[in-house]
Length: 565
Image (cartoon, rainbow, N blue to C red; front, top):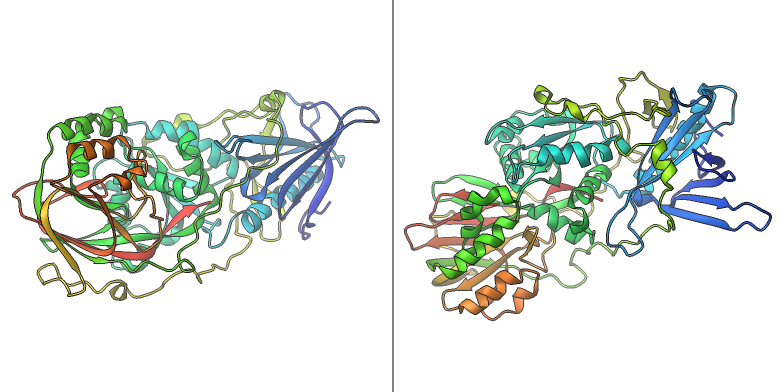
């Protein structure tokens, strides 16, 4: 087995005993398809059982040494972590395999072997399990947490769910707890972006709105808005996180936080549509989700008084608004999108196949390695997350190592940081449109007439809402045809003549079937202008209220970068 500074063998294969699991040694293999374990039952006619984890389901590997409760101090150990789909494909489950390395007489030599396997796991993950471009694994992530988002459970979500997965994947990150409104906006306006590999939001969509507009206000905004962003739901809306789950065909609803955390861990950079919004005051905003007025905006904004109940607030307030429908006179102008031919439409992610793992990890293995793993080195304000420091098993102690380009490992002190470099550094940009912003959509100033190729509708409206994502909230599947990078804003329009029965059907079934309800119009556009004729109302951009009055928006196709599988 290769170790030290030698180039690792590939594929890797060997024979090891599973830690605290009785039976014969297992034959294991890591290659471009993933990780395979073959074990033979006792007796001459023992049946060989094979378990397979796809490279795209692996998340990390940790090397360990004997703790106080383990007498065999010369042994080294390595544990592989994965989150495959279950047999029915309806949820992701945690699977671990812990192996003893007892090939040599000293711990140091056995550790070299364990580290070779660890390097092999990360090679499988980053070269064969995750497409390029990826976040730069040699840098840490910056995570921003809003403790007051939605029901106020974002910090608890981090401590109980996110930190352990980051620990398993050895995802180095720094944590900042936001202290006030627009704190995140202020942070990113002057942030040294070169210091981090990306920004991760643990909150609702409101904190991401702050971050994007902080980037938009920088002098280098054209480059800054392309900075890698990760989204983990912790608020009451969570529209972008839900839209990504829909697009990736992930079992999001079974565990939204896990699915979204795995997107960050893998760190593939998928292009994301953004939009520039211009208000009557001449202010420009950057939007990633939606813009609109009327019924849905009223529900979103007015239900803020119920934010303590989380996403249920939208359903509760819907009944109030349907009983007291408002109609808004307005002029709506738009440039209709030229729908792409079938061979030009961005491909939807294929249905995910589950790994061929036939049994859950035995209970005894769970005792050997606790669920709560030590998280990566983090900077936390005022000790608010100090209780996240997690217990180590009395049997095994994690060995901190540095992952190197040639696959070798070097032991560090207990305070060492992980510094993983990507197996492939080059980024494939061939699927992106790198136009200048002025070429994305020729849109007039708000005080100028719309071009002749625009369409205009003047009427009373119950609502007009344009979204660039499929969902504007977890249970609001507004635009079934939308994908994160189709270059389209999807207007859902309901005119004042639409009967209440259709409105009720809409709100009771925002599952995609509403597009067939009479009176519900769906229009694909690339630019939109709204000119209200009433004196008041709520204009909503990404869930945030902007001044009531004329407003327009145009799409910036594929300009953002969002972390996905």
